Image: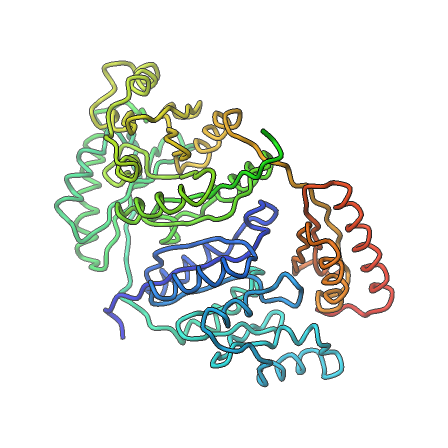
Length: 249
Length: 249
C-alpha cells in the first residue's frame, strides 16, 4: 500500500515533561521512525496527566490523522491514567486482557503479579497488544491509536513491534547543501528555486558554532530525480554566492 | 503579582522537527524557564511550516492560556512564515518595524541590510521587540504571544530578555525520593498518600539502567511544608517496602 499519503500525530503524556523534570527523547525517535516508514508526522502535542485533557486530545488527533501514537502513563501507579483515558475516548470498557496477564505472569510468575501490577494488563475492549522485550509490560493498539510507554528504551521496543504492522507511505528523500554564506544572502535565490519546484520542500536551517557553515539547505520530496536536480541548482547558487560575499548572517 | 496561577503553552514551528532532521531542544528549555518563574506550562504543540495550521494553533493556544511562546520560523528565508502567520492570527498588518531595522543596521551596517535581511525586521503592528544578544535579529511580543527564534542559543537569549517582563505565579517546589523497589510494589501506598494530599501532585517515574533505583517518586506542590511532610511519608513507605521486598519492576 505504498504511494498513498499516510499521516500521523504523536501525543506525549506526562506532567514530568511539562515541568521540565524530564527532557523528552521520544519525539525525535518517533519522528525518525515515521520518516523511515514514509509516514508523514504532522503534529506533536505534549499534555499533562489529566483525564479530560487526554480524552479530548486523543479524540481530536485520532480523527484528524491516519495514526495516533501516544507515549507515557501506562505504568502501575496512580498517576498512570492513559489506558483509562483511551478507553473513555473510545467509549469502551477497560478490562484485564488475558494475553497481557499471561505476558506479565511469564515475566514475573503468577504469584508476583499483584493487583497493582495487573493494572498494566488493563486494555480497552477491542485493543490488541504491543509487545516490548525490555520490561515485559505491553502497550496496545485500538483503532488507529498506538499506546506506548514513556520510558525511551521501552517505547523503542514497542516501535519495533509495531513497525511491520503499519501502512507505509511514499518515502521522502532529501539532500542537504551546506551553505557558507548567511541566510539573507541566499534567500532570494532559494525562494526562486522553491517556486520552480512547488512539489518539493526546501528548508533553510541556520546554525551557530561552525564558522564556515551558516545554514544547511535541505531539499525534500518524494521524487528522487527531482530532489537531485533542485539540489544541484541550490549547490550552484551557493557556490556562486560564496565566491562573491563576505560571510555574515 | 505572585500567588496567582499563570499558565502558558509553547508552539514549536518547523518541518525539520517533525521530519526528524532536527531534534528539538527548546521544549525542555522553555519548561525549565517556566518552572523557574512559577509559570504553569500546560501544553506544547509541534507543527509544520504551514500558514493556516500556524494561524489556527496560535489562535487556539493564545485564547486558552495566559501566555503563548512560539519558537521557529522567523529567519530571512521563504520558509520563515511565522511573523506572517502571527499577523494574520491577530488580524493586523505586518510591517517593517523601525526599531528592529535599527537593531539590524547597528549589527550589519546600513548597506548590508538587504531587502531579504529586512524580512527579519517585520513585526505585526502593535508588537514590541524581544532582543537577542546572539544573532541580533529580534523576536517580538504581541498581546500575550512571545515569538522567538528556533536556534536554541538564540531562543535562550530571547528568554533572557523576556524573563523580567512576565507575570510570575506561585512557584512549585518538589522533593524526589529514589525508590529501590518496583513501581508495582510501591503503588498502593503511594496512591494512599496522594489521596491524603489532594493539593499535591505525586508522580512516579520509572527508569532503567540503574539496578538500585527503580523509580523516582516526585512530590510537587506550592506549599513547601506540605511537600516536605508528604515526602517524609513517601520516604517511610519506601524504606519499609525496601526492607521487605526483593527488587522487581
